[in-house]
Length: 133
Length: 158
Image 1 (tube, rainbow over the protein chains, first blue to last red):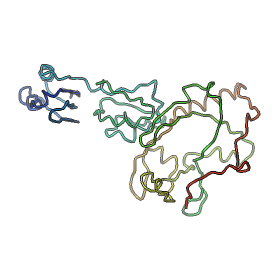
Image 2: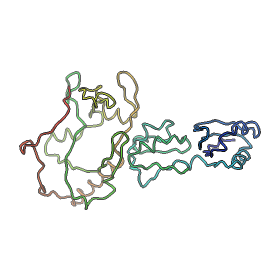
Image 3: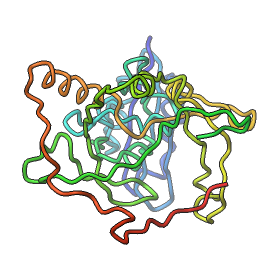
Image 4: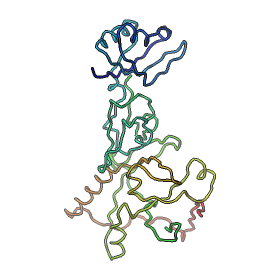
């Protein structure tokens, strides 16, 4: 069972629900929180890695609560029209999702490693890193 | 450029003033950009042919990444407070490896200009020259120099 990386976005009302507990307890999933921005009475987001046979059921449970569930790979997209492969992002990317390929010195992007920290969107001089959440 | 041992090392840095007709330029090589902490600027892709007129020019033009050096400058504190000096010199080969040593510590490096675009420009220029399409012209206008009463203001380095 390979891990599934997802981005959750939830509104003010679902922030109070113990969703991680439910995923572990009711659906027997292994949950790894990679990034979370949860505040009382505010919209929030969470990047999760879930592993387990019943992961689809668990995700359906989240959707039924009105939480948006998106595949992580679609969250951050590089606009290849804008990117000039300068490499400014490779120094700041904490997971190495954006990396220099040597010796070609072209910038590679491995969406599986991305944790949606959004640092690249601020650093990119060309504004080539786009958020689709 | 002289290193701490007093040995001459290849200087890779330099600033070039150029003029051109904006309306004839391609947006592939002239892009409005914004650097966090610096501001709005232009990213310019420019190719300059170097005529090999003598042995000295040939020697400098053939310098490899291992022979070209850049100073490590502390832009966090020293540079904005006009403190002269640097944290040593590193070669372009070291910079391109992704890691340099500063005061004994490993520091991650990242480029700001595009090597792949630079190679594209160089090969385009090479193609023009080989086909005889790249022709030299008289200068459109000379750039101002100290003789014209033009003075440059720079930070004094140690």
